[in-house]
Image (tube, rainbow, N blue to C red):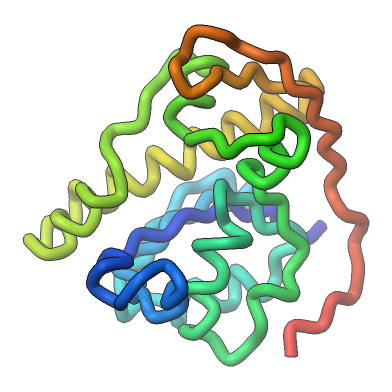
Length: 189
């Protein structure tokens, strides 16, 4: 069976550094965190190790992420000689937004559904990279991968996630029908 991969990236720079959100693909990746279902293992890839990540991505039957279709995959795509955007994807944030009608943060979903919090934010990750604090960067990124995996599994198992409003005062049950894609012969080239 093809592997299911949960992925999260961290960047070296901000939108301000590259000239705005419309220059998304100009952001540079510092670290990629991955969870492999087939290996039941978390793995981190620093800049310079992405060649080891390529085969894992190429063999994936599903790439799971949070804001991955709009952020992680397009930014990461330039590091490979195959098209990551052609991989079967499950962007949990996109699915929640389609049903709920608004964007929701990973942290708010984690608190409402798992009773856990993120350990920081993307700006912290940029600081960790700038300070070459690889241990903190890896810990931060892989925690986001674990939260994404756990939310995905919960939604798949129960068919919904609880989504708090921006103020955290009202919580809405958002139905999510999660089906994993059938094995296919998707071309990445």
